[in-house]
Image 1 (cartoon, helix red, strand yellow):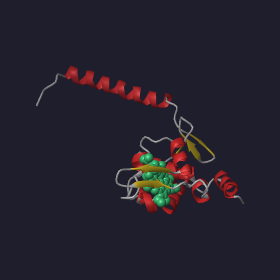
Image 2 (spheres, helix red, strand yellow; image 1 turned 180 degrees about the vertical axis):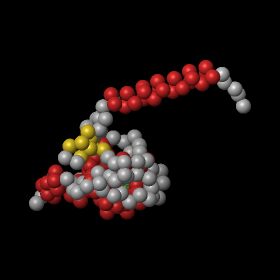
Image 3 (tube, rainbow, N blue to C red; image 1 turned 90 degrees about the vertical axis):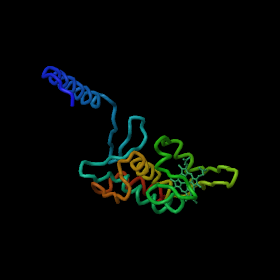
Image 4 (cartoon, rainbow, N blue to C red; image 1 turned 60 degrees about the vertical axis):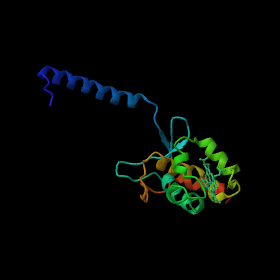
Length: 174
Ligand code: HEC
């Protein structure tokens, strides 16, 4: 074991304290996500998730969990983890941004491989997907970031926001 003089220990502590203060300061200066009517946006203006200290998620993340499992799960596997048929979206969303995600889901995409043709169907006409695309995106983003560990059944932190109900109604055409 190495022995440090008392002076070293104190100096070390001072450095640590400065580091801690710097980190705390910079995280406040960084543009972070914002919330409006229960919906969270990141600094780039793309929808994102919010998870409270008690582990409960915002409405959109909760809704996305449910929509994902009714519309995408059959091909992309439970909790976005992929299948032999379609890629793991929790890997894709580590780098894929919202506009690209939206494009692929709405317009579909075909990838030709030597051994097989891989087809993501165009879902742009499916209101059960398109009216909840932000929801599905933020759920998958939370999974991709590791904020929602595998096997978590998300609990929502509050009631459905009025804005969500309104948008849903007009999007579904009622
Ligand atoms: C009928 C099966 C099927 C369904 C249903 C389906 N997908 Fe796909 N998806 C695929 C296949 C196969 C691919 C890989 C081929 C490709 O990217 O063109 C893919 C690719 C993707 C990609 C690109 C991934 C990457 O890493 O490039 C995204 C994003 C995606 N799907 C999102 C979704 C979402 C969101 C849903 C549900 C709303 C969904 N998919 C439903 C089969 C499906």
